[in-house]
Image 1: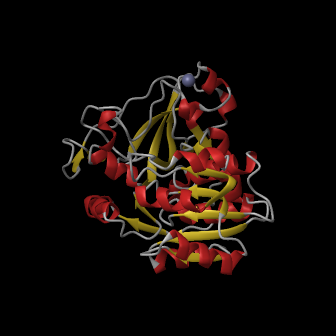
Image 2 (image 1 turned 30 degrees about the vertical axis):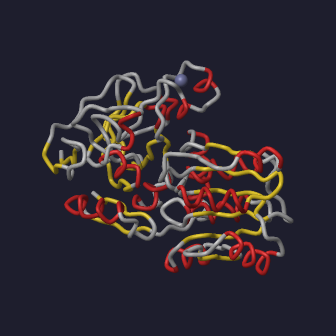
Image 3 (image 1 turned 45 degrees about the vertical axis):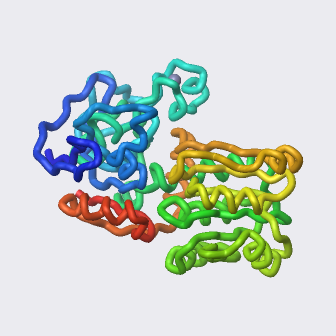
Length: 351
Ligand SMILES: [Zn+2]
């Protein structure tokens, strides 16, 4: 099969022919039809995660995976409801199934979690073995290039906004801010409208193209933050929403300058959920967080439940996509564009 692999960190991927993987009895061999390209693929290549997990090479990146069931292992139960030819998406966090997090369905935060695309097998290849419990069968009318990004870019902000909702941070008289309109933010704006309990949705980004996407997806207001102080932005917020602070924030960047700005704008008893990992430090003044009783939530990727809910919304036609398809041979070129943040929406490899 064709595979694009990390042979050495900080080098372009090597596009090569490797053998099709074997499957275990409880696994399914999925023929990959599309795989999204994520900023974390670039970070993996660039060694960002090495201090947390130094994964040995060769690695096949690619964790936004959708495709077709090619072969079922001998112990795959009939109750899985899968047959050869079915369309599936791959849930990303493969837990051990035994810890307390797995037992309530949060397999993606299992201490023994494995990730497709962060080891020998990933979506930048024509086939991948997947434990059957991490496959979700999908409506075969949905397009592969639109399904792929939903498994990360499209599920991660969904979980983040559910956390804001479950914390009671959303209501019709509140303002919900979405920071960063890249691969995740375009979906975050849509979920802000779908799950936001009527909160006013304000999108923040630095480029007009990305803000235009946010507007098209239903943001009530858009604010270009480039070169502006928190006070400037507070005035724009006041003009647009009637208040100069934000009750609930989903940060799709995690960039140091966005963390500074967005915390500065967070209201009394505000909730801040970060799903972005552009930076690697959270360094904000402590007193305002305590005296204003603010809450910070980490939110990581999504569970099978979150992904199933996203798939149901996709099947209802509720989710719109900004996707740029590329071919296998364009992978390295596309990684360079992702590194510099030049892609609007999601780049997806189509096989
Ligand atoms: Zn576990």
